[in-house]
Image (cartoon, rainbow, N blue to C red):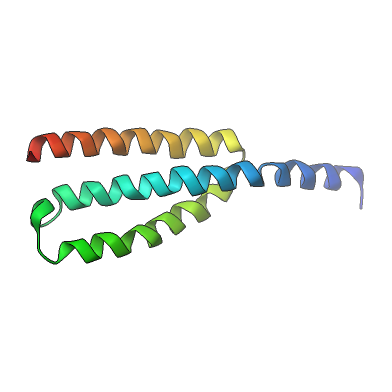
Length: 102
């Protein structure tokens, strides 16, 4: 095992904790925002009868999908930029959808 391999493994592993933190917090908030957009703009709007259970149960698969993809980014800054940017965009979209449907 040469020193280049060891250095590369340490460098990759140093990002795991921050990527895990980004995936858990920002991934969950993005899942909430995406489900909120669906709840407001989806079929039947916010007052659809049988939509509540679906909205509640779909959060976890979306969150886990986002949480697992965070490790595909080369650095923690890429993960923070893209997942954070998606959060800002989803929050703005949710805000607009709620404004149009109010």
